[in-house]
Length: 114
Length: 114
Image 1 (cartoon, each protein chain N blue to C red):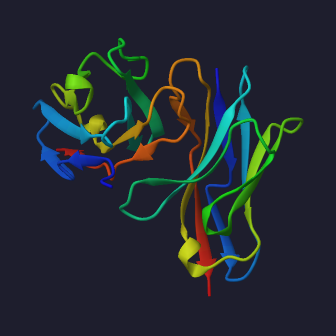
Image 2 (cartoon, rainbow over the protein chains, first blue to last red; image 1 turned 180 degrees about the horizontal axis):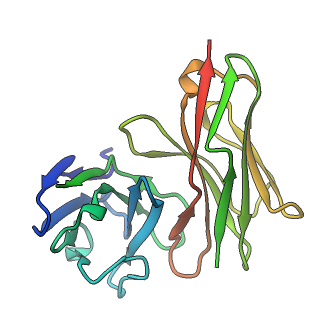
């Protein structure tokens, strides 16, 4: 079956612009995670969604970052007023539910802020 | 709070030699431990995981890891390296205090010499 997909695969933007990154989890997976992979910080947890529960936003680095998950499926990560330090690969993962230890990762979106 | 330390940002072995990638963790609750592999320009792939069952865990591609609580370690090994094992490896820790948001180590890049 289809895995986790993310779009776009690459995004180049200018400092100060807003960007939206999309994640399509595996069908039927209720848990969804966003991570960021950058040279300076390694792999960091950003946000976690489980079903209709309030998301765990404890990893979001600033209020310029937000995410939503519509209909319990597709998720969008939005970065407002992008800064150069936001340049990174943004990875999405999904798992069957909040008791499942196995996360399936998408290929990531490579964001470059000029 | 949880944390992961991977000893050695780069490890180089000869083809056919033993692979040993070191990982130590810190966790205030019984941890779930993972090793992921990332090939160039690809997403993360789960190699193996420890979820409080057997302490010696076997994964894909001939890799295995042993959970040692007394040493707070979860080192990854493979008896004989192949050229195709060249990649970056991440050790990670998680708990079930609300999903499985995962804390990753800094990664170890494995080089395999012919």
